Length: 106
Image 1 (tube, rainbow, N blue to C red):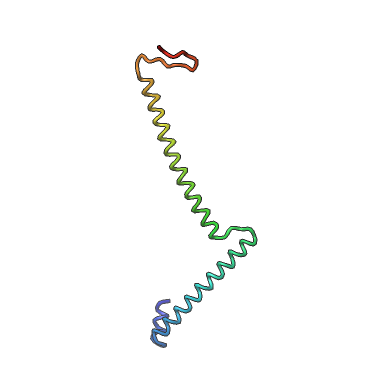
Image 2 (cartoon, rainbow, N blue to C red; image 1 turned 90 degrees about the horizontal axis):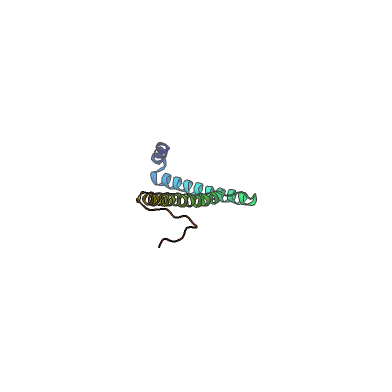
């Protein structure tokens, strides 16, 4: 496409061709934006999510996944700490484990 614009620039003058190409691109962008808006409106009327709705849901899902991963790491760490404490208690010689109904030692 660039070579075609280059050839047109030689024939009609580079500034005119670049200006026209810029206007074409600008019009195409505006048309795409209008079509996107219309599609979003039609999806809304049909009760379906638009692209921006889906993007917002994806962002929220990313936050939930990150929070869940963080929570999982914390649970794993706490579980390891509890296991280490239980192991340390069991390794102390001469210590008896109390049961729920036992009297306090004096």
